[in-house]
Image (tube, rainbow, N blue to C red):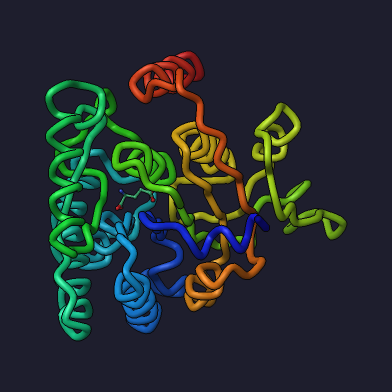
Amino acid sequence: MDLREAIKDKKRIVVKIGSSSLTHPETGGLDYNKMEVLVRELVNIRNSGKEVVLVTSGAISVGKKAVHIKDANESIAIKQACAAIGQARLMMVYQKIFAEYNQVCAQVLMTKDTVNQMPNRENAHNTFSQLLELGVIPVVNENDTISTFEIKFGDNDTLSAIVASLIEADLLILLSDIDGLFTDNPRKNPDAKLIEVVENIDENIINMGKAETGSSVGTGGMHTKINAAMIATKSGADMIIANSSDIHILHRIMDGRNFGTLFVANKDENFRLADFLGDLNEAYNGSK
Ligand code: GLU
């Protein structure tokens, strides 16, 4: 079957949206229009009989905006305080819009310990299963307020792939400020071409991921998206990177249309999430 047609049959879908896609670039204030379209699209997917999880960023940027912090080099304590302020605000807005569509949502905040350690991982898995069985849309973020470096995922691209792996999702959609994976940085090289399908994440693809995306608000560049694609595809989920400039792209993707870059699932029975996270940590420590 055509790879895009097969998207129509996906049953458990994780959608990730980044801070830069939720806020106005001029002011950093929340873009309510975008949030409304996002929630409506998610509820519509849910209403078509599928299970949906949202992974959302924005806690720190919304908190900074609320207490008028403009500094980009704020201390960790300020960032964590801002996350506490911003996460509550973010959820308040999501709750309100989900309620307009009669959809129950729930907040799930995670750290690396949630998936690295037993019985935490099993508890998290059971909680997600129960929420999905109840027809709820879980809204997930990293627990930025309490997470220190040792237990931090650091970016929500990785977090969303981990959630997809944990709950055995069959599709992960990363909404980003770029159309997908390009052969080179399209903001610098006009000849850069969009890659529509990646069946195998080889050296070549990993190197393409090293070209920067140019986004300054979120933490995830293309490199973290390729890491996310490794986690998702090895865990048995397709992953799509798509442009969030028009969030209606979600139903177009679910209709089997050709948008963004599709990384095809390639389940690896030997893939262990905890080992992969350990390796990522080592790579990070080594580069510090
Ligand atoms: N968890 C962070 C926040 O909500 C964002 C991480 C990311 O953008 O990848 O502010």
